[in-house]
Length: 348
Image 1 (cartoon, rainbow, N blue to C red):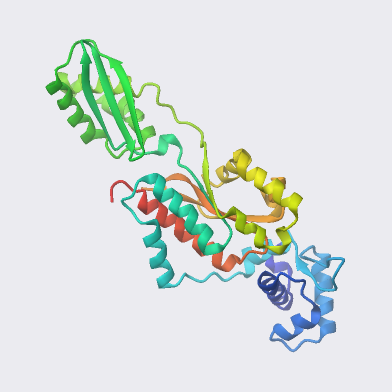
Image 2 (image 1 turned 45 degrees about the vertical axis):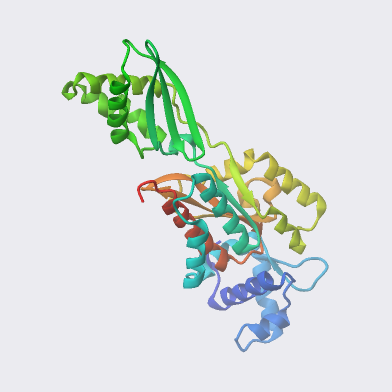
């Protein structure tokens, strides 16, 4: 269904109906539409238009009311063709930037983004954690243990430090290991873990003929350190504000809420849904059953990838009722994704 199928009058009435329903959560009658449309239309004319919209599957009349509510198809047409998204106010932008901030440890920044989405939308804010291969190596250090055993300390983030033991072909002095440490940190610090291994196995391997012996040995130690470093699947997500969904009347059914909260707890299927947005060039909006995931049939998900230096690290978004204020939520998700990417940039 596209906006071109409807004439201008039908599109306008559908837009007014959906905006009114989003605001009040009650079926919208023909008389109300006639009054709010700003057009000189009788209630009978509006009823005829509503009958056409219902026939096309864009609105439906609940059995308890003479008014109508939008369907998933109606929301889709509204979002794709009728919605006018306005930029956020300057003071809102300033507040968002301060709340996410930069310079903090990555886990705190990610948690802050999830909380910010929940706070600004009064719905559930979700942030998919970066894949391990997308996390940046801050620095590494080689320390001598005994004979040919060397302790490697990897600082991946402020909250993740790993220790590994490697075996070298000859003993190294502390001074030699410090030299290797300095060389590798200059070459690798700030690169994502997935890039580190590729750099060692390809780019630096090709240039070995121009390196001195110490540099070659440093490369060999680093290659041994990262030999088993393979990219892993996205493993977790952060959720904030999910209990706020209980405040929406259309989601107050306990059985429905239980299914939804079970989905939040299990996370696996929700991660798969967000994963569909990882390679998207822009924001993705799943309305109701479009998600293909039963517990979200009465929800909409607005998701956007967040990136550092043009490389997508993960996805964030908002989960709420299909009756959400798309005009306000869409720019909030968009701006939060940009701010999160900037805050996680190790080169800032």
